[in-house]
Length: 93
Image (tube, rainbow, N blue to C red):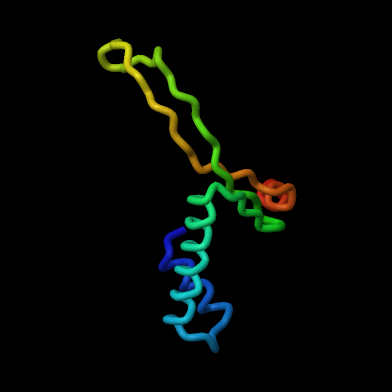
């Protein structure tokens, strides 16, 4: 779902709130998640899931799939999401 579509759905459910206010709320929400992840904090939204950072180890023996050449892949951080039991049950109804 795109940002614009999310804002439109929020507007449909809350017609008394103007669009610019909803855009501001969505921006602040996403920025807050990004800043917390940059500080390597875990974000838990009850009933939805958890966002967290996972450190991926460096690899010395990775291969370039096109050439077969050995390459070095440095250590990096990846964002992961683990859905809650409620969300899994809701999706699998």
